[in-house]
Length: 456
Image (cartoon, rainbow, N blue to C red; front, side, top):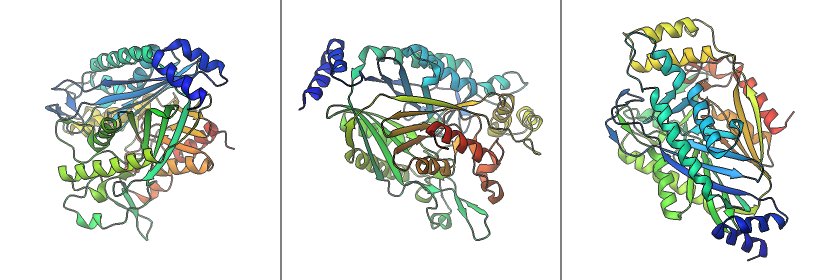
């Protein structure tokens, strides 16, 4: 083992005194720590997507993160086993994590994994529901304070365990028979839609995979040759079956936790630009199908980790860019339309909450930009995007830096809902109908990504 590797690893065992020696040895003094917090709502909480009272916790919902300290500033990457976080709910997660670890909120990225057996966390929408007569079942907004306090306390405790790292590794592998496009475009330029499962629809299973990103990417932080944490990035809706009052981290969480147990290395999973990607071609909504999806995703994660090449790590660079997306104001999408849906007791809870309160909340915050961010370490770029972006935005980001390793996490602030390509609005299908933004959002988001990457 080389002297620098030896000192770094001894420092990890003995703590701060030798960390200073490592810093004087010529490289940046980099340290990290990880945290994991149970963020499952209490039993009885109305839970997405049924909004029936939570009756069963099949798997605990986890918030898993890493704190990176370069001696001057800390940054946080956190993935939460919730369906979505929006508006002030998303800001609450970020701001409490920032205060807990001693950094600025602009250096905290919080993404949801987007399981559909998990809370839909739009605090602004929930507060709107609290103001109307006979609202649909929804989580208590006070739960946000309790769960973020618990998460912040866990992150704060983790700072006591900061340890040096001096290597960063990248790997990738193709995932077999998990992701498939939800949008198959026919010869007339129109969308044939395939959802997250094809139960009773064998003809949809026969359609091709369509446009996906088949590669799962893994970033590893290590001390010498010893991996400390792995971050995985893959683009698909992470759901097998849902609609019952059950909490589950579904097949990505199953694969993630199995690999953590097998390797003894902390694992975090981020969902990429999966707005138009799901497991529908390979999923019949059975438990057997979920087990198979989990095993195939696990195989992809293991292959990606096995392909990892470690290199000396440079000082992290964190950049942000504002994104302002215009709300749709055409018939059926106005603020007044959204309020009417929210207040209509004859409509179901999903319509009243998603197409009513959440869409209204987007209108009310439309003058306030969303913050995008990228963490760059050498040739590695980790891009954090909002909403449910289509796969095109992930592929665009990779094309923009063809000589770099680009990992993309979607599902940051999900207030805009689906972020679609301009062509999707003429092709039809579910995604543009559930997008709160205009067709110009494609150009706007791509321009913001270009600014983050320093592209013209």
